[in-house]
Amino acid sequence: MTESRTLTPEGENQILAQQHFSPNGMRVLVPLLQSYPHYCPYEVLLASLFSLSLDEARKQLQDFWDIAIRPVRRAISSLIAGLRALGLQVRSLRGAGSQVEALSRGRA
Image 1 (tube, rainbow, N blue to C red):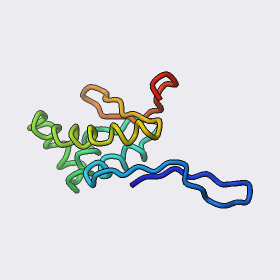
Image 2: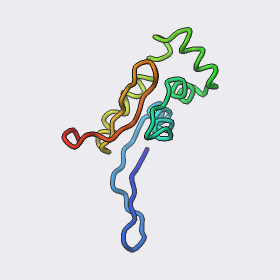
Image 3: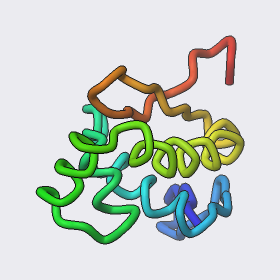
Image 4: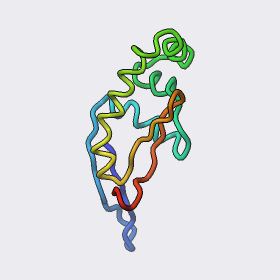
């Protein structure tokens, strides 16, 4: 689950929006948000999804790209609706990784 908060003039927290994400979605969302505003490399996403070391994830991607990347893409796909509701999207950078960015005003 992820939520957005703001402080009221009285200093109290107020929830602005709340979305629920699948466990696999959260495993890739956390490193995506930690990398913001930069992109998150695919090996970091794969390592986070399967609790691998970066070296193990890198080797899997080098040896079995098509097979290794599928669950990462599936997990990212599960985030689309929830992120859209928060005014965000995930952009894929071919062969490099993915990046969270704000939706343009016309698409929000």
